Image 1 (cartoon, rainbow, N blue to C red):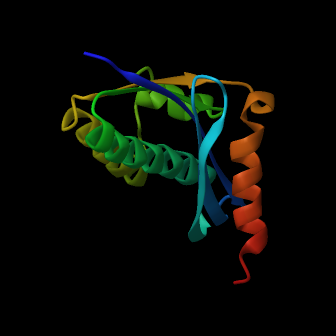
Image 2: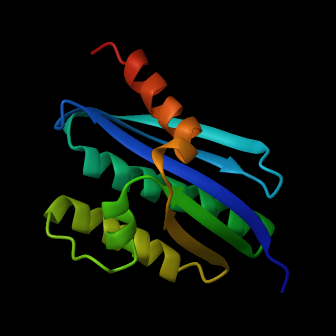
Amino acid sequence: MCFMKLFVNIDGGSRGNPGNAAAAMVITDEESRVLVTKSKFLGSGQTNNYAEWSALEGAVAALVHLARRYGSLEAEVRADSELVVRQFNRNYKIKEPTLKVIADRVWRNLADNPNLKISLKHVPREENKLADAAVNRELDNYRG
């Protein structure tokens, strides 16, 4: 079976924590060409961890869509949130109920789509600049 390989940088942010929050993802190919940049305003009164988990959920949803469209897909997802990486990889428990609900949806979505293989790895903030910039643009554009 031939796998398409993609890389996805994700980020979430909240100004105020809790405050106005946004999530973003940048999908690149094996030659580091940007294929997709997507960001979303998540609302006010949200935490940074909520935004980070929402970014992961959005990335998984996009990857599921691509895997269904193009067949088998392998993706390395990169995040600068050590907490989310460790929670996703089940090294840390998720105590906050809202985050647990998002995590369960992410894990269920992955389990329901065996043609998608992902790994989630922590990267330093300096290696996540495009996703961070997309989050900040989204937050800057909010005029609530």
